[in-house]
Amino acid sequence: MRRTHHVDDFRAVSYCGISTEFWNACAAIAGPQHWTLWGVPNCGKGQPEQVMGTGHGASPARFRNIRIGSAYAG
Image (cartoon, rainbow, N blue to C red; front, side, top):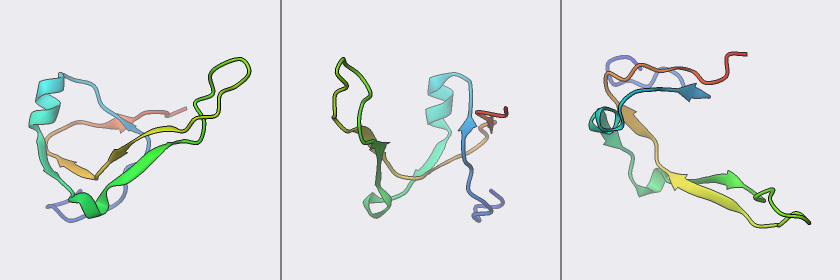
């Protein structure tokens, strides 16, 4: 991000810190028109395997002064 202008998408990022500091740094959350359901088609549990979708929804959000890194830099 640069001066509130979108520069590039961040993928597979991670952060660590104190939860209240993280959420207090949330400057904006996109409206309901940007909400997307994320998840997987089955939960992968059980014997035999259960078939049940799992997931949760989220809107893009902007955070200020949060240090991020690569979640999987392998």
